[in-house]
Image (cartoon, rainbow, N blue to C red; front, side, top):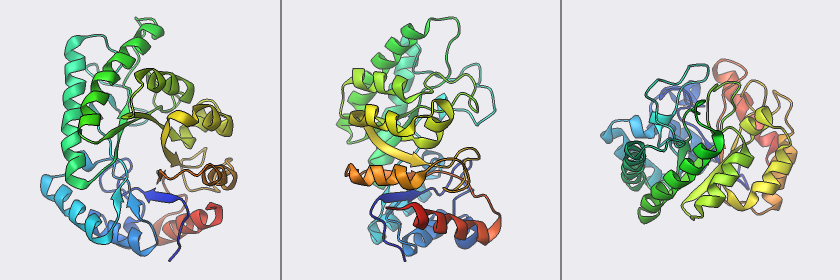
Length: 287
């Protein structure tokens, strides 16, 4: 079993509830995946689809995490503002850039529901996706709307002990997304000015959208609450793309980062061999 200095959190569902990082070894059931992660030295997991899982499953996850002294690092709070990669946003998709009062009320309600899920499983963070951009409205007005909407949402989250992680995602794969860069997410989070609203720094998206990963990490540092990793291109384990994760993760460690590092990627090889390659890749780059 490896002991990591950073708090890595492998996912148990990335693009679907059943596609966890270690399903070949542990199967698709969340509890078995959690146990396998614990056996391999991890003390946290991500579950993008936690909120969509049955209540009984959420409670079972909470119970197992407590038994193993593990944490639920983050889950996606805002499916209504999301879309799969390469799939156009639905015409009625919510956006944090909206200035409509009814949309704000819907967003606040979504966050309130997420607070209850977080309490159930002991989660500290939830992932917030911005939703689509409105090409008919100047971007700056939408940014102002996003700041105001997130202020309302952060107030609800803070009262419930939850932190919203605003995640910019790259526009090459998620065409039409409103918040796609770390500088934009930083501006919004800084303006919200709440301990309950931070930026998720997904190095994969940063590399694809703007590059300059270490520079962006430095400039956005005071708003970074959560980190995610995947190599680019390909969104697989470190060492399969062009990114230097040994340097990036060493930088996090040297800065004393004590938050979660979501292992949010796929596998470059099929079967158990692919999952062993993931574990070996993490061992190779972990500080």
